[in-house]
Image 1: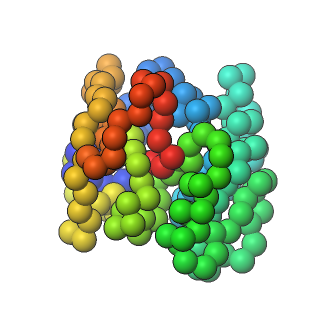
Image 2: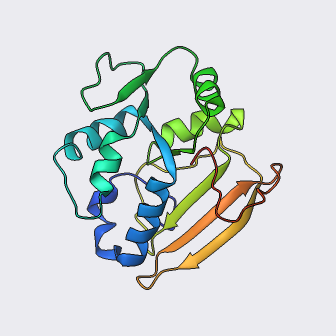
Length: 185
């Protein structure tokens, strides 16, 4: 997200800042997760781009094969491999997903989905990449309706000026193992 909180259309402004450090962070995040949770807009963008991608590190294969849970009131069919609609009450559906055994469920983009889950305390960890630019207009991750008490547990400045920030909910105890990650992004 930008310094002013914009997350909309990162493909238009984030790529000049990409480097190996960010690639390593995204690789580790993906391989430490079991599933994706996506809103409709993010799902549609990913579903049009990812199925044809390949890379020597296996990132695309991992991303394409992971279960993808999609929160949408309008989509009826999901074409991307291993995609599933979250139907009915969103909070109840995500709570049920979190109870399943396994690794993390990660949310990419999907600001509306994140804002919908926040009041239900279903996001255990926020992993943010903050880019050194101010964009002005655009969809923001957080808006005036969001409230959360968070605790910074990790920060790192990458060579391109992007800052990785990892926050946990302040009311949730830290996990004992430093390599463990949360159920939600």
